[in-house]
Image (tube, rainbow, N blue to C red; front, top):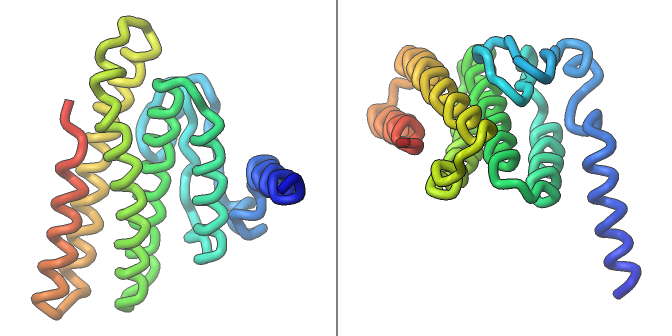
Length: 194
């Protein structure tokens, strides 16, 4: 039992301390990170956390390791506001990845992959939405900052989903598939309400 515990701790430390596993060397060179205090990125100005700009789509393996790192970071974060900020950050990055996937490829596999990435983004947004009562009930600067970031996230998400929807309308010819994809995008748009 002790060996299982030590192995799990080693894997968690590896996932947290080596984020380079989640990206290729070309992606590391192409990905830019903004400053931590006020982040000016492709997504707008988030305050208090940084969002990585996505310039290259990670492989399936890279997405797997990205998800492992995200989950480990969320499990080891105990503050409600900080956890919500992390979830917003990860959801924003996932939406940017989905948009990049659609922009780079025309095939059905790319659309399916983008749907899976958006599904993870939706799950993260749902988790933030579930904790909104706790966050709104707090009367501190960090909670107010988070609410401002959520408003910015919603505006950017609406734009991004509209862009993705327009690209999909151009590429998908099967009406049933198109309806299913558009329903998922509508679901994505309706998740957070303050």
